[in-house]
Image 1 (cartoon, rainbow, N blue to C red):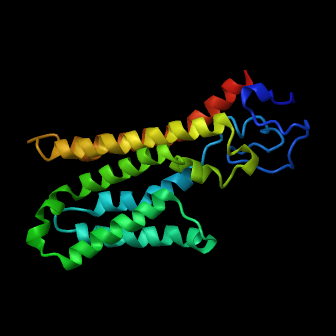
Image 2: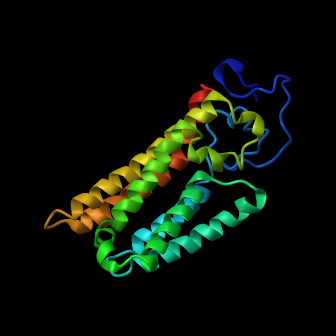
Image 3: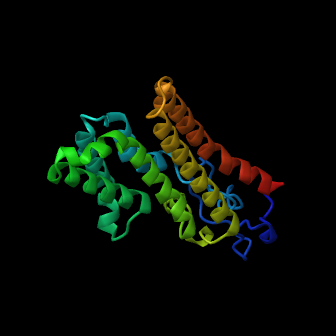
Length: 228
């Protein structure tokens, strides 16, 4: 196999030697994927999806009469997801945001009179989708949230390579855009007389499926382009 061209941002080691054999998230042995890792290795899709689990649970369960229970279920899921990181003394921005948001939401449900929370009963799902969009898009100013997941399966020497970082910026922006659109659709559904099922369920689910597929496809596309 040809050695990676350093000018193409493919993370050459400088010695021309392949790293020790191991299996990468794409299923390709690392020795065969040496040029591919830094050119756009993605986070494992199931890991990213797990990061969204509390928000998805809340979206599915929440309604004007059940949003408090939805917040509790999402909070429990967020706690479970955060335990491994807390044991390592680290955190992922998406999971930390889940923990804070649903803890605050649940405490509000317990401590504040229902009459003062009528707005929350109406806008709970839209608010949740808006918050996750802000978290995802806001992470672009620091470390794109998908990069935190990708680092778990990519050797450290590739973390700062241009293509690795660019790939994760694009994936993060895509996920942020999906949840921003979902929030806007939910807001629109509150003010239309028909089509709420399409706005609240059909289109958001289609966007979620498309985002998952894009997360799998795009890094492979980047690697293929990098190979020339």
